[in-house]
Image (tube, rainbow, N blue to C red; front, side, top):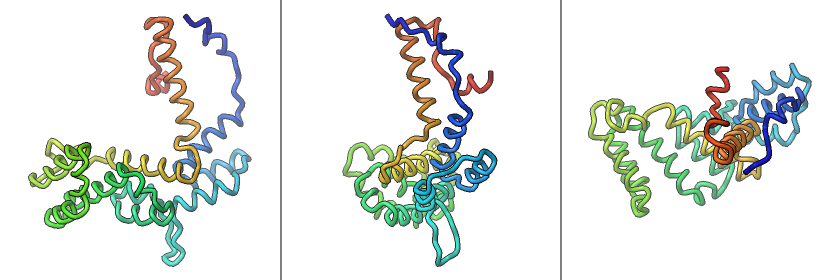
Length: 226
């Protein structure tokens, strides 16, 4: 049985700078550079140069086109092939070594073709780029779901409608961002996410050790609604 009572630490203070650094790390982790710069100007914090360079790389600056778009944004927009090209430029061999991520990005392009009602193009793309994954058992069921979308005139109303949701794109974008960060030897999760993960695990551990009635599982949603 644990002899540690978390109530002993209720009055432990966290400095404003600690909080600001946690917020800043979240913004930079997710490539919200402009928001981070505004945040910096209002707090007086300084950002390490190498962190700025890292964000610029992940955002992918194209000088010849005079545009700036992030790999993250490409995925959220459904432009998976552009995200793949930029990832291969920024992090060579990443997708070659991460088969799951590569599959998710290719499937996202297939889904966008289906969404645009380009069924013939989607079928050809699926046969050429996705079918080879069928040799690996864990991808078979996913491939069946993707191909089944072609059978519906309105795939958004099919049993696989979740594949066309913004949440699906978001999950793929988050996975890609974490992978690119890990490839650059940076933390795959922001400080804010790690704090929440730790709080969740600690509460689960306390619940097991002390009893369910003493420390209910940590819920971020419930915490924010207090």
